[in-house]
Structures are given as C-alpha cells and as structure tokens.
Length: 79
Image (cartoon, rainbow, N blue to C red):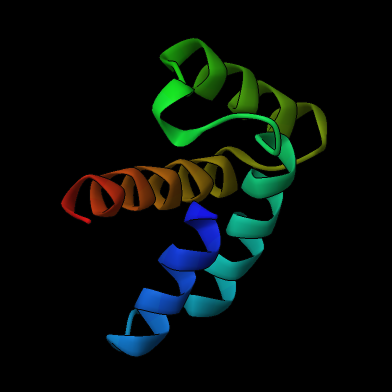
C-alpha cells in the first residue's frame, strides 16, 4: 500500500522523523483502509483532522499528521 511504500522509501533515502511518520502512517492507513489515495478528498482530510481532535490530539500534532499526509501525497505523485 501507499503508506508502506512511502515509509520504505523514506528509510532507503535517509528520511527524517521516521518514528513520527511511522505512527502517522499507521493511523492514516487505518483511517483510510478502504480508500485509494486518488479518492481522498479535501472533505476526507478535514474529517480526518476532526477525528484526530476528537481523539485528544493537540493542534500541533494534527498539523504534523497533515504535514506527513501532504508529503506522502506529493511523493506518491512523483512515483
């Protein structure tokens, strides 16, 4: 899947913040288990952020999750 590919490529290229990105990747993969990357909409991303907030994540942590998601999506376009 895309999250696994993303994390493997980060490891291979010496990516930064791997521990956090692994955690973010696990949560995102669970959240969008039934959805293809190409089908994720801005509404889906907003709903994800709201779910993180409901689960007690701070605004800074949510921002980090969204940054990881943005990086993953940008890298997926490159592949």
